[in-house]
Image (cartoon, rainbow, N blue to C red; front, side):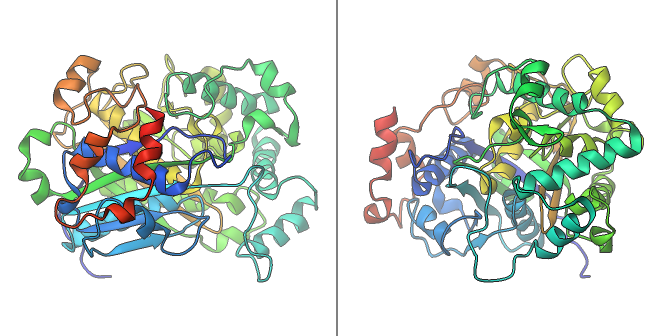
Length: 458
């Protein structure tokens, strides 16, 4: 492996759309445009500053990324389109950081988006072997064949294995979902913002035991974006150093032979996560005890439970005890898990999920998430895709300090948005969009009717 460059990479700007039910009420060009505009406004840049683009999505035709990016400008920059299952958005962040650290670019715009179909996730291809074919066969050989949604079976089986080994109960998984739904009430971008009691969660329709409906992430439409910049780019803008977030450690890993060990937990990436987080911790010079807040891939509540151990937050076999003590929510020992509400409540538009996790942790470390703030210096992001890929990011403030609660009024003074995006979701105005679109290579034809649609929502 070639020596790694020592150039640091920072998240300078982030942007999100509200996550919504997949009903084609908003098309992906509009969603991606809104998220990108917000991220560039937040970073206080213009599209002419962007040297590369990374588009992250799972469902859509090739070069869908260009359909979004051309709305900002047709500046001939490289635009990469990437798909890595549910880890797609964070894979885009990994690409951007790798390119920045290599010296290939100083400013990269990453946009993750998804326009999904209602119901459980299904493959778009029926005329060729599935990348999950061998995993499905192993699952059926070890746990039987069932008619429930395949992904729910994978994670329910992992939860069952944890129960069999360590004595966790169905109520432990339901409590995780209860906490996620409670957290989501303070996230203006969350698809579901309703609190549920433990009994409501346990009595919701059974999907695949022990997982009920309210313990499963929904399909969603939405978009997120991030501006990733080099040390040199940031040094030229010293007034923005206070909002820049250092990607202090990062790992993208795929499966080892443990995938096919007949363990239901390893079949959903438990081994892959353990290896990836160890590498990310090492690069960042931290350990699990240093993490104050974590956005982890809770596509199902069972996955969150096993990941508490996989990420090093609990001793082996003790994750359910963390849940019972209330360690994972406000007032507990910590780390606080998914203050955004996680995938279970916030929603899961596949390509956008990794960018939404990034945005939440940036707002946390800046102190902007003042209605759900977790005090600390280190944040961890975990984004998993079956098939498989996992991305783990460790974030710190660029100034090396801990966060502090920042008022909405102070955010307005220092931000490029005029409001606090961590606690309020607004659509960008025509003037704001014009501010970030290319000054030298814009095409009104490429913009189409996107701006009209956004303006109609104001």
